Length: 379
Image (tube, rainbow, N blue to C red; front, side, top):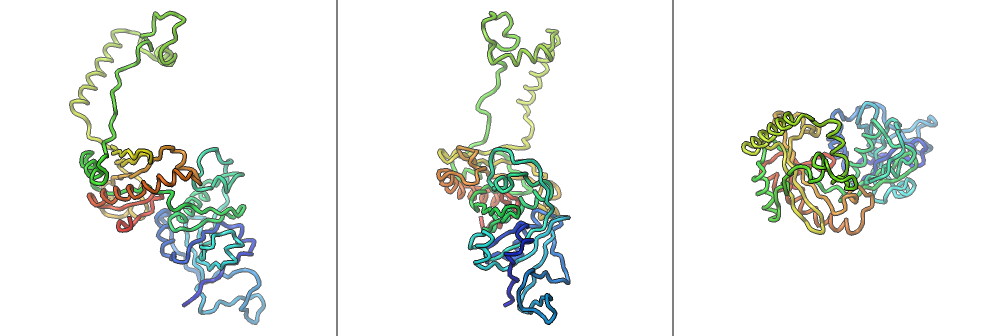
């Protein structure tokens, strides 16, 4: 069986590049599919020139410095991602190479990213689930470098790999369990009651997301109702409404009444003949584990792999199965708390079960949070 060329961990040029490290069971075709899922023009580039590792190594021909690749070695290939960015590999990673590069010992394959260096401002405070803020403290990647790096991290998460940042050698190993949301993409529309029944077949506590009350107007003592109050009595809710009325309000009482009557008539019409919903939600209260929602609505941005499918040409509906923990900021934490991870582990099977049920009812495709398609049998 042909072997892969070994990565040259000591090459300074290599260490300045971003790397994707993967387990040995990940095939090049899997990397290609993930690339096409994000970059519509992704393709393998055929070349007559075999990429050669740099540095002193054998075997060598009689001419000093001319490297020969034996027939038992499979040359690395280049996968074009974008106009200025490409991914070359796979390369074989030995244990000492992984240690030298700081990659996990499970990384036995590697791909080298060639991309433009495009940096913007320093990272803002806040969540950093992917670790990119930690990896780029002087300035975050922007434009094409940002897009390909985000894909690289998403691919590592999907394939159980790691990303080595060329700048400082920072290694990012995204948690494969950190992104559990799923989206069912279909050309079929489920009415709210139908979707509720589907979700209730998995979780009986599911309910439609509806307003718990109705707005009855400004609170007493606010706006015009505040006129005539003693000067030492503060306006209910602050001066915001009064200030807006002073600047933009209608002073003529008859005209104001006409506008109010017109608004009331429109409200009555909408209540009597409600418009067809364009989006809705189904909620499941998970108690201490947070909340699960199914958000249905028209999807206008499809993964590249789906754009040319016949059934997507007349419109696609997205049913997003989303888990929200009690402390939402933990969703964007690179290393969330133990309690969050426990709640997530309990919510993940429910997310998958709901996605399976929705897909079973309407068909279509299932995508993960990175818009990579998922085989329904694997959900």
